[in-house]
Image (cartoon, rainbow, N blue to C red; front, side, top):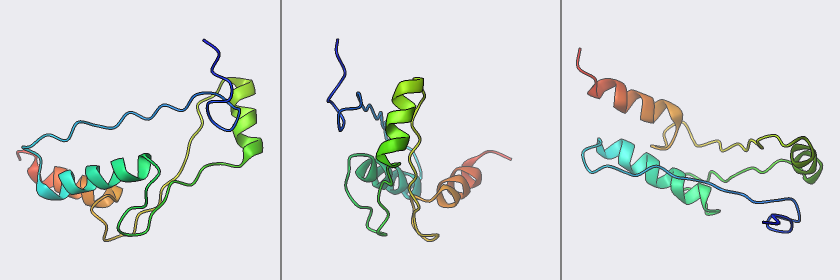
Length: 95
């Protein structure tokens, strides 16, 4: 399969989101749903967007056959922030 031209001429992008289980705390479910929105190119209600590296960085990653990392910075009070999800899961653990 020729993966060229799938993403700005630089290969294939594959994002796999988590299944959102019904038994998760509501804040975790909301956080994961918001992360899925952002991963599909939409904007989180907190305003966070997917920040894709520059074209040069993308091309370099393709040449080197490296995984390309992107960033998303949710607001501190957003349920999709790392801290919100970690806190909700931590409070759910048996002590």
